[in-house]
Amino acid sequence: MSDDKILFNSGSLEEFSDEMWKMSESEESKLKLGPDNADSGLAKLVLTLVELIRKLVEKQAMRRVDGGSLSDDEIERLGETLMKLEMKMEELKKHFNLTDRDLNISLGPLGDLM
Amino acid sequence: MKLLIYALLLIKNSLEETNEILAGCDTSDKNLQIIAIDKIGAIVGNFEGDLIADKAKAIEFAKEIEVLSNQFTLLPVRFGSLMVSTEAILDLLNKNSKEIQNNLLHVENRYEFGLKVMCDSSALKSSLVENSGLVVNSSHAKNLENPNSVYRNWLEDKLKEHRLEELVLNYVDTVIKEITEAIEILGATAKFKKMVSEKTIIDAVFLLAKDQKNEMVDTIIQFQKKYINLMFILTGPWPPYNFVELTLK
Image (cartoon, rainbow over all chains, first blue to last red):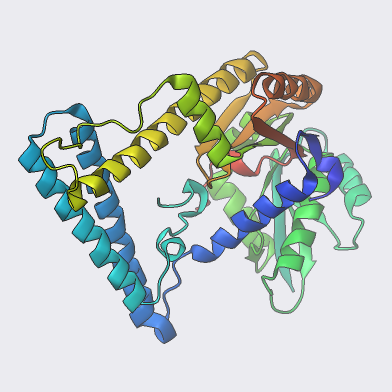
């Protein structure tokens, strides 16, 4: 982007350009499925969906805890379940050599999934 | 030889006059020409060989569209839209004339502007917690009978994160609401994406009348004065890339 296109910038150009660079890198996180990478592509797709659902469940659980409607016992079990889910997810990511960034696939004009 | 489509446009004057203006824009010798039916036309250039969709070529294509957008109100077409013949383009224009015309009327005499609002994420969170008086550390997850439960402590940490996230989201929504109100006065249309990254909390595009550019800049300067912990970056004018809602048949 040429400088004359920047109409107002209160920070440094370098900071802006670094951020743009990072954002363009996230374009790389688009799901790439092809004959040569069907296994890893499928693992990425499945884990992305699992992670999305896990995060939604976690968010809903936090809302309920915050709402104060759960008993001590329910909170204890919820904590155990969510913690174990997170640990299992970490294991799976490690197994398939995937990072959080890999699972946050780009949905093009809609932005990132998570 | 194939034809590469650059943009679609409304032909306001005669086709000859429009072609003359176009000739002045053709700085890179691409033999740009207009293929038209009635008042709708496609700006095309000759294309030989295979299309290689690399970054440099895409930038070159975007530059050409930018030069054209200074002269015409147009709908930019995605890089790589190749057609085999003039007849194929006429057929395309014919099948989509109504949708093209509606889109062109929507962007008529307007430019796109981009706004990114960035922040130091941890500094913003600290200041929000401080100003809101939110008690992040106390929660329903704490069990006084068993304060050392691993699960409860884990849940407590997650709850802190969750509350902070909600706090930031509410703050971002407030900023978006204020920006929306301010730009509505200028008659602009806006599209917002929030929390694009940890640093970029708002990524917005505006469609605004060409003569309102300075007012837009002034508006953003006022926001910067109000939100000193945020960094506002306004760019443009751009062709209306994000305001073309058209799926060609």
